[in-house]
Image 1 (cartoon, helix red, strand yellow):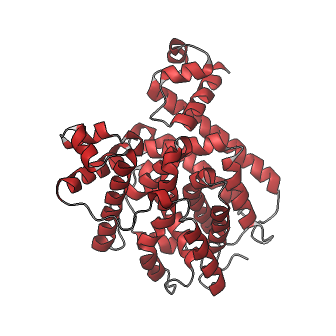
Image 2: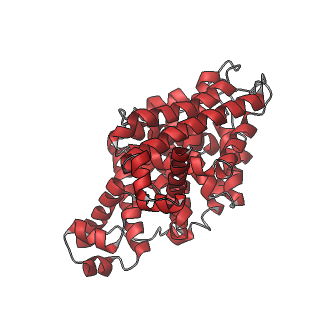
Image 3: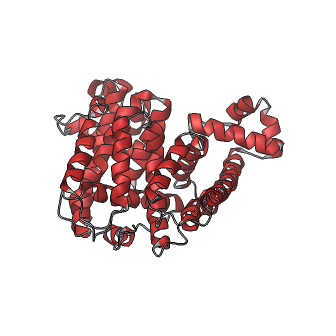
Length: 384
């Protein structure tokens, strides 16, 4: 029981400070014990992170059993309640399962950089997907639906935590879930797409502090520094950004960085835009195959950072709005959907693809052909 208490204290620290902010010292402080006690019972910091992963697997299995008991023999597809279950699952992650939901995302991002976590993170992902396979076992499309829903939720969960108080976001999520469960044989009502895009535009209001459409593409030394900022974001995460770290990476004085990017917001915006330019270049050059998960990491790290620091919130919302814009036309073509005719469905498949990408990064697997992935995630028969 003492080991579990220490591990749960570590989970709480990760949920508030991130994996990068977790140390044996602050876990000891949270648990009201000594660093020596943690070292004796669990080991070093790496052993503690591994123990947290094992604990999350245990908790995920318990939650899966709880939901299976709740549903009994009902088929959520035949009952027409699958969309309700998805929404409630995400809401529960913002409330009762908040710590586990945040810790899972933190561990997924960490695993992509720490290979020793690979076996356990794969088990944790599998446990989460097994919940949906259990709930959908009586549906003719159960296996495919389970994969689709699990990967969508993997991407959506952190935003459901961050934006739980945004009515427009919650309405947008409802629209996206309906799109997720719509098959190619069921055309979207044009008014539904209008409603979906109106909600997207309304989210421009809380994202306004991050939105700078007229900002020119940097040139010269400013462009070189912006690329260094992007490198830091990709390699270390947004939490590592500061004028000092950028100056060190670029081999220049801190004052030179501050001259081009006076505030922390300027530094963050420059890096985000540089990463987006890389994504657009990759999409143009490689078509259906992306060689990087930079945007996946960036959006999730910004969302996690925004939970602790409100300064990141506009960026998280802006990226949540813009991700699909970069690939919407391609996905619509791959899914044989007339461009702009069903934005909710395209958005949902993009999000499921990103959830798949988060898992790919964490498991350090081969990056998939995105066209083939999109096709594999798409429902060909309406579930209801």
